[in-house]
Amino acid sequence: MTSTTADIALVPLGKWVYLGQPVQGKSGIPAESQPNVILIFGWMGARLPHLLKYVAAYNDIYPDATKIVIRSEASIFWMTESRRKANLAPVVETLEALGYVGASQTRKHVDGAPIEPSGAILNPRILLHTFSNGGAWQVDALSKSLQDRVPASSVGESGLSPSAMVLDSSPGDGGLKATQKAFLTAVRHPILRRLASLMITLLVFISWVHLRLGGEPPLIRVKKALNTHKLLPWFSKTTPRLYLYSEADDLIPYPEVEAHADTARKEGLEVRLERFKDSPHVAHARADPDRYWGAVKQLWKDVSAHSSH
Image (cartoon, rainbow, N blue to C red; front, side):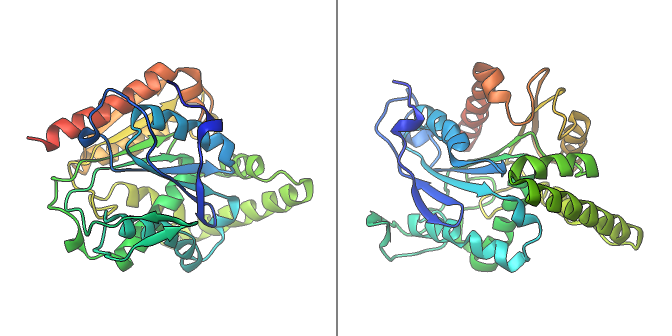
């Protein structure tokens, strides 16, 4: 039975963070071969109904997985790092309560619903799915939050934890026109749109000056972070990256995505590319769902098979 967005009940955990418990369903994939948890990082300005479509798809494919949805708003780009990390604290706390990181033994309640901890799971099965630069920015913030709070000893040995990362329409270089368009899509109020446009122009100029003076713009740091072996505690050098992108994307040009993937390869990371021809930005699943979700399922199937050897 195919899930619909009307079937989905998400529990708000904090600002822009939502929890979806495992659902009843049969996907034909054994529970032990499904992810324990799927982290979904939305693109900038994506509303919850947009992201529910991806939750519905994952409920059909991996019903036994817990889904954690993280939205991205334009304001994350001018928040302080401490504020971004504070917004993602519910994600870290939920992962700890579930036993996927840390060693929490306390029974956590989310909106009255208990989450049963089982101690630290040595080899958690975690699939991360991120969209556009907005999602990548939030992934980087989560990475820093986990580095602050989770000891490396709380997860399994490198290479034993089945994990994978899906990058949809990401990452791009963040040029002025593309950044302005992304922000203006996310900001709907006409006056705020104008202010946002001016602010982005200023921020891009400051980044350019920063670069000329030998500094490193924030988005460049985020792109580098995505290619680190231990981006998240359960990642390793064997954690594969699947890039889903399009030649028709006018926000994140496909050569920028492929350049990032090429850098990942040079870092010794496993990379898979699925290039669509005509689909717009973050619309590849809608344009060709069979190909899109087929690539995701094959990615996780291969990860699970590799970890079982």
